[in-house]
Length: 115
Image 1 (tube, rainbow, N blue to C red):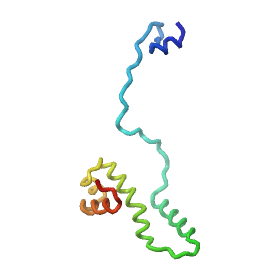
Image 2: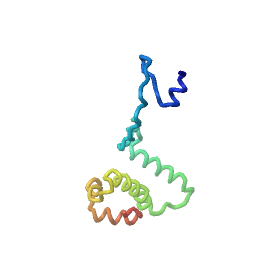
Image 3: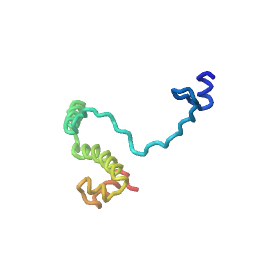
Image 4: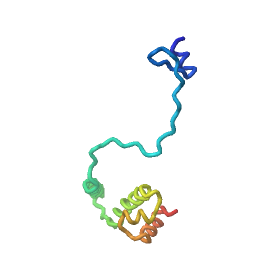
């Protein structure tokens, strides 16, 4: 028999030339695959670069409510990431963030992330 026939019928040959049963399919792992280690830029540096870019693109316009803008841009993805890590447990997420659970719930409602 040629190799195509073995593949078609799900049979493989071992080194001794005898037929082997096809391999069983295994369930996918639930844990996420490890990401390759890369040298990430620190959040502080990324923030400084983003702010420099923001000021450079103002074209003479007056910046307004920058503090609120930065908090909105940072808080929402922060809360999403921590909630994912805490598997949706708001008490655990609040502990991780170092804030009161009531404060977290209020912020989640503000960003439309409350369940």
